[in-house]
Length: 234
Ligand code: ATP
Image (cartoon, rainbow, N blue to C red; front, side, top):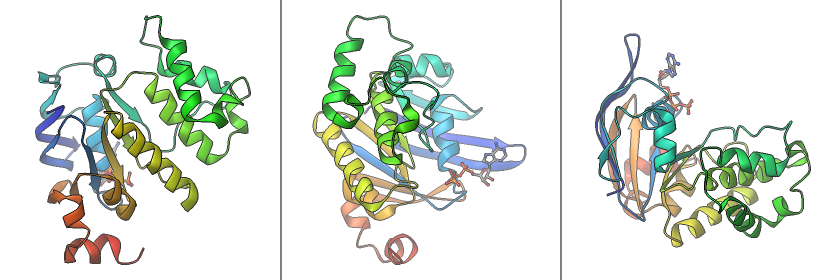
């Protein structure tokens, strides 16, 4: 198991955003978390990253990291592609990639940048241009590339398909599948339930801070409750 979360609780004042949830991600798995706006998905990710106060236990690669700082967690390989990409448009494409490596001191950074360029040729041809020239889809790929530069053991993506055209969403989920085939463990938080279920092995469904359903993604795709609540209108 690469990630194990027990009784995770996130509160904002008296408002409970994540209500004592348990989730697991096995090594090499793609797991998705589905849920409507306000279900608590982003709060869950923030707690996993150590960006928000929480209680409960977060175990990553068999270590209890609950008391570790956000920086320690990234250094350990717990890495997020944030919602809305958060690309710095005042910097070049390559400078954005280098930001992903800011906690690294090894000599392989440029080898890894080359790998990102091989994966995303559109970034390669624009490496020294301002990131502001990139399309929404290219910015999403840059955000994935930047996360890869942090050498993740678990890559977490928060709403990666948000605001992207269907064609780019296809391409993005293709990239996620390729990374997984190469051995990457992945946790995706998504409102695009259909795509997320298609690319994941297992899924959890969050409502009002609680996990209300979990299972094999393929099974959930034909589950009546999931179809009517999350897949019906797509
Ligand atoms: P979205 O898809 O809209 O980001 P979400 O499933 O990620 O939704 P959260 O953003 O985690 O859900 O929100 C869960 C609950 O916590 C909501 O009721 C939200 O209003 C509340 N909440 C989130 N962030 C804060 C905050 N910083 N302060 C107070 N309440 C918050």
